[in-house]
Length: 359
Image (tube, helix red, strand yellow):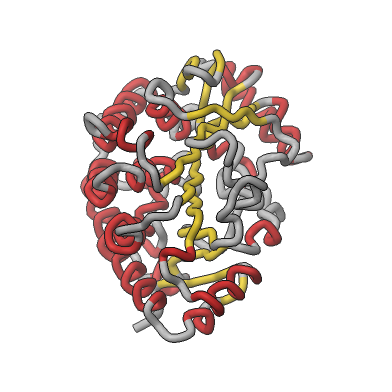
């Protein structure tokens, strides 16, 4: 059978694996990208990590996510992570909208789904989790991008996209990176990249709002206003700034675990720094920032055998009937279990580094 899982590692990560193997104690951080329903191809891996792989862990596990990545990691930090990730998988894959749904209707569905994932006590469980240390990226909108009206927001988005094409640092004129984190003194990545950032401790008053905001896709879902402790303003999808991330991880001088591995389950072995960079063919994340990173991705052969020969994306909402979309997404989730099985076999194999490619 064709291999479903493609595994890549940075130079330092590969050397670490050669010496220490791939037990969960070698993983000190996980990264989760934006990408809407693309993450269904990783659902099997998420179930494995929320179930057996990290079971009984005693060392801190830092998580960093924007948009869908942050939503996935909110499940990891609950007391019953496997049950939580299954709620996310089922709830998101069965999302149902009326024909020609309004932004308000889509926003309402998103809020209901998030409340379903977190349950009655999920926020308190996440905030009191002694192991999983959460960091969520949100984009605070500046200028025209802070308005909900399409006639104002759209020109702001277009202007910021043009500015980003000229230089990624220009995004800072239109957005501020809002970092919500369990430990403001131990943010697990280097965010000093020329884009203004503000670090805010996560609290019972702001955590769910931050999660809602990081999934608030411009022109699709309404932003979140005035998040407590983060200041007044309009907060939107964290992927605008950090889509797949382009920073060094575990760099904080106070981080005693910075020598460990960063595990990054991703949709493919390709990394775009920000949302607008999807449209810039030559712009990719700096591979030097992935020196200590282990990447797990579906192989091209695996993807080719999925329905429609691709992984899910947001176009499925408009290009497929609801029945077709739900059936397709459930099939991808089912097939993704192969990736988890192959990773399990890799972890338990002799010399796993021999089966890993350099990023």
